[in-house]
Amino acid sequence: MATRLFGTDGVRGLANREVTAELALALSTAAAHELSERNQNGGGRLTAVVGRDPRASGEFLSAAVIAGLASAGVDVYDAGVLPTPAIAFLTKDLGAALGVMLSASHNPMPDNGIKFFAPGGVKLEDSVEDAIEARLGQEWDRPVGFRVGRVRQLTDANSRYVAHLLSALPHRLDGLTIVIDAAHGAASRVSPQAFRAAGASVKAIGAHPDGLNINDGYGSTHLEMLQTAVVENGADLGIAHDGDADRCLAVDHTGAPVDGDQIMAMLALGLREHGELAQDTLVTTVMSNLGLFQAMERHGITVRTTAVGDRYVLEDMLAGGYSLGGEQSGHVIQLNHATTGDGTLTGLCVAARVAATGRPLHELAAVMQRLPQALINVAGVDKDAVESSEAVQQAVASASAELAGSGRVLLRKSGTEPLVRVMVEAGTSEQAHSVASGLAEVVRRELTL
Image (cartoon, rainbow, N blue to C red; front, top):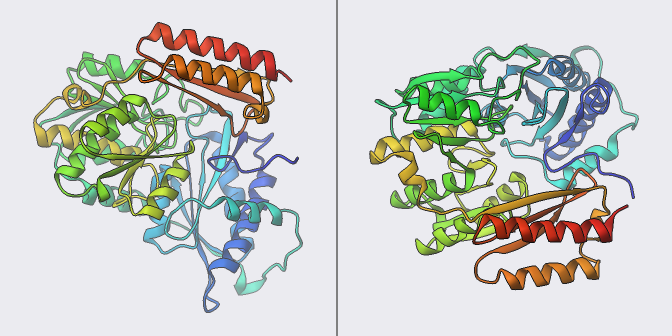
């Protein structure tokens, strides 16, 4: 069975080995043709918005994407370095037929990726990605003369996005001191700018990208620098982004981390207070902590679950008309204001909740208590045999029975690697790790390739 080119969040891999200029060129032309057929009405020219994070490889990959789109007759707005959610917003705001973001999110600098957005700034459905992949290598009629696409710099991209963020802000941040960790990534300029415009006093760290240092010791996967900076500066809170700033994690004034589940819990309550939580429902993934489900049940809020990936959260939100959803990792979607996870918007709303209530972040985040969680990645196994292995399923059933009422077990195959993720939540950290280790050993023994 052939491996699917697109993963859960676009095409991603080692830049210039797996994600090459040739692939970027071919994918962009294939996407232009596919979306042209799906969205063209009346024969007008299509437009696209292209952005990237600061990785060095993004320079040549974005050039390849832009070249491919223009060669296919698409007019291109080059937005430069901006967060992924900014490109989604601009795709919608400009009425573009296509948005393209060059980023590998939280991955190390040598990686890069290509994400596509459909009209309206939403991520492509699996079927559309498959159709684009099927077009790779096909012959096509190349436009000439005036039919080739034109390329222009979108010089007001940053200011457009900041204005959008401020328009969504429910309360100003005057009086708050906030540390922003931009992961030396795509939000290094725009996030501190937005927080300052909202009234906060801002200390920015991890905000000096040089093309090589993205996610290196900073950002949402490395909270230590932010925790230290918040305490040293006597800040009210800290906000951490990943490389493309579609995520937000937070740190309270003591340096304690606040994850995506806690952020969703406090935002859900705030939205409901203002009658803005559609159908009193939160959408999240199966990986969210059981404590989130318990907290929302106590407050009469329904929780819907999806497969892992903010695209699946978004699909469920769109289908059901829900306004808030996201993931434990910090992808939070506020559908009234964004079509994808937006780390800067999320951070602004977290800070606005602190400002509006006058309560410290640690108190707001305490609305839910996280159950101890253990996650073990078992590599080098036949991930597709998880559900069919009798021994593995028996082990899962036994562990679930042991944790009944006080925890849960989840085995999930990776979408991009030959590994199985074993996640266990329990009443104590020791029990969670013990049960997870036992299950991981069964998976390793029964499914090793």
